Length: 308
Image (tube, rainbow, N blue to C red; front, side, top):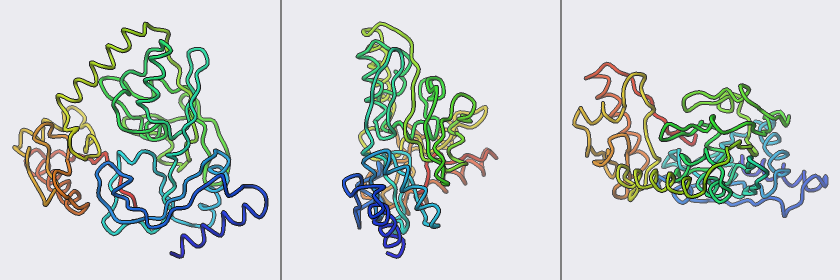
């Protein structure tokens, strides 16, 4: 409650100083994190929604400078929320959804779903973003973690990202400055809030692009447990190994803790198959990691982030 009061005082001050108006942001208290995350688990949180980039660029640094705990949330598809909730400020970019096309480039704000980005690219006969189709995340999250699938990665098509640092500096990160690696970027370390990104694509054939997207989606439906709540692939790829195969080889498909289960369809997914708690999911993650280490002496890492 103290964190919320302090944050609310900050936004009220920004309004008094005529730097922001009340119409540029929203506060929501006691929001169920289960309603905001794809695992469908977790307690409550106070959520701040900037409705304009200006609101994001002014409020985020102000919260950080005040020493408030802030967790930036996009689509909520690669995170686990704790059962006890989150006591800081959940900073949601979900309502920043402007997107535009100019030539072979698409500029999209952080809250744009990547599937919408891929669809817009297809409508404009722009190739290169097909791998994003069907990924249940947003532009901000994709850039933040260098999301990828089917031999494509976000780094392959992002030419620059615009972000605000915790000290209030607005900076454009281009090329190597993004620090992209496997499920990694400079934004994880510098805590920059990604506002938007520019994607550079190639002129292509709309029908061929559509066929590729439909093929990727068909593969997802066939191989992934899309019918259950999850956070996508739970574990990072191991160097030299397919993590899902390691888990499968140990006979862990179907392993359960409470309502959490290692998918019988794809061993790389932990799913909420029936009223799981976050504690169930955390316990199953640790059970899988321990089994792989005990039998294979390989330390696997969790790809999913925890809201804390």
